[in-house]
Length: 488
Image (spheres, rainbow, N blue to C red):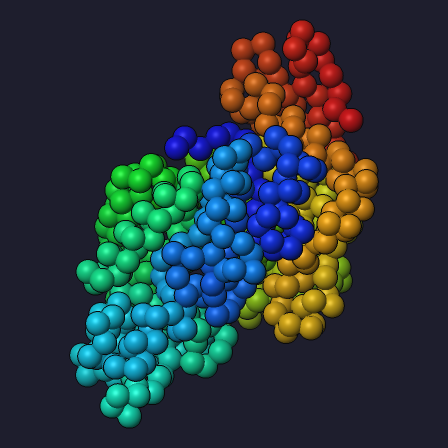
């Protein structure tokens, strides 16, 4: 597959209408030919937690969402991107349940990381744990083995429960490699064009390191899985939440990466009324990126923007977002918290709400995303300019649910009548089809309260001017005859 330079949609399988059949109906009825760049369907597999990110298997689709036939149907008109949680699998999977039953005698035992694979005596050392970039208080969970009546500790990077629902895989084991190969083969058989390697930065566990993006081991793994994916004509999108320089290392080796820096810098531009950081970033960023403003998690701050933000500016953004209803996830490891205590990992809220629920500001922010080099992705809540769903977050106790509202067909129809949504759809069509976006990109020097971005391709051009003080923007472009047109 060749990744198209067109806008992609990100959605849960049940968030636009209720299931995969309804999703296909929504695409056909309300957004025909709009997301020709692709559809990223967040995990549609049977799962025991984390809204699909604790998968039991990749061989099945959760029945309440539909079946693989529904995925194939969508793939006939849209490239489909699915997730592979390459770092972990559900505690309820047949693989780990067999381990709980039989312990070391399980035929699947080598899939998992028992602590003696890390510490020879199986006893974790605090000094080693203190170096790890933790996503929970301890990077392991304890389980009772039925056959022996004894407990086993296994590595669990993620999970809010104790024991965790997400059990790390030992990607060095022959069993794990065979399983990943079988998963990839099944994706290929069912029309999947691209696979996002969720949490791939955590797959290497090595004493004396952060256990995050451990070099050179991580590149050896990526080389192996890239070769595997290529054999099935599948592209890969590694998902790495780390220092932006870590992302750039991936880009230098030719991998697609996520622009997790962009959302914060766009917030910074509109809240702090300055284009300085945004323009400086445009000068250094690689272009082989998927750009985003919003997603199923939150807007990254630490560690993604280490070295880019100042504590004072970041705190102002955090404060404003909090006033606009945001909640936050925080860095757990003391080693990775800034001096003075700044510990924001992600800002959670809809991008429409975080930008003040102002149509002009929101559309200007989207324009900045679409004019920034890369493949744009639009999250389904952002597509409908959705506001914070604080009630859902309070009901579930999951802060990220503030930006995970499930839209009924009636709600979709209602939102499609809003001017902001209508204009966003027109902007997506312009970004998809205007030939200038396959040309050369440039940034014109203007004041620190303005931005001017231009794409030129032979006699075609498209330009964006943003006034940060007024929170508005203007797009001009050449039509088929070469005449200058103002987008409205």
